[in-house]
Image (cartoon, rainbow, N blue to C red):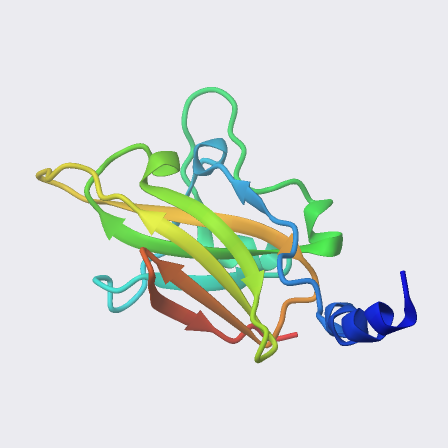
Length: 163
């Protein structure tokens, strides 16, 4: 490669090197794995969003719903060493909680210290009662100053987790 070609691509290489990782690794927690429910919030007709950075945070908002057989109420304790869990919940028609929400991506905002959780929400058929469904995502710590939840292409929640 000649010197002129190297000089021409140098700004692009430097720009790429200066970009922080845009897509942090994440794991979607299956809500069917945990026998818990989200404590009530107000206003109930709006989504609820939270960040859990410890088992105590999780237990403060997620309440046990014991059933016959094996009862797992929270993620394993090891998760909290290097991960946090961000959660969005909403009241909806009943359906399989794991099918109501789909996480389509988690990105770091390029213009601020923010994490963006992108989801699709597909409500179940109309019913005579409702449930609270949630999507929970484990992400590396530390959390940024702001977490946005985007549902079906629009922002629905913003939280500012404490460090």
